[in-house]
Length: 175
Image (cartoon, rainbow, N blue to C red; front, side):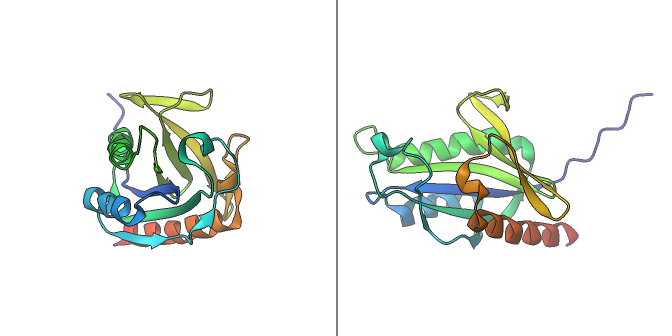
C-alpha cells in the first residue's frame, strides 16, 4: 500500500526590500501588496552596511526593510513569487540598474526559506531559474544561523521581526 502523502501547510510570505535613495519605495511596496495582499508587519528601515555587493549597481546609502504579508501561501509557490518580484525590480530599474532588490521567502514554524536566482552548494533548484535556501532554522525557542546565513539575518532587528512574524503565523494556523 502506498504511503499517505504528508500534509503540506501554508507558510508565511515575507519579502526583504533593499533600496537605493533613487527608489520609489512606496510604489514598489504597493506593487507587492497588489500581488501578495496586505502587509501585516514591517521591520524598521535600517542602513544596509553588511556588504558592498550591491553598490556598483544600486549606489551608496542603501536601506533595507523586512515585510510580511497577511495572506498565507503554499511553499511550492516560491519560484513563481520570486519571478514576480524580479518583474517588479525591472519595473523600477533605471539604465538597466535596479533601484530596489526584492528578496521573497517564507517562514514556517521551524525555518526561514529564501528564494534566489543564484545557485550555490546549500541551495536547491526549484524551477525557472530559482533556487531555495534554508537561511535560518528555529529550534529551542530561537533562530539558528548557518555558516551561509546573510549577516543582516543574524541581527537582533531581523530576529525581532521574524519572531513577531512567526507568532502571527502560528496564530493564523490556529484560526
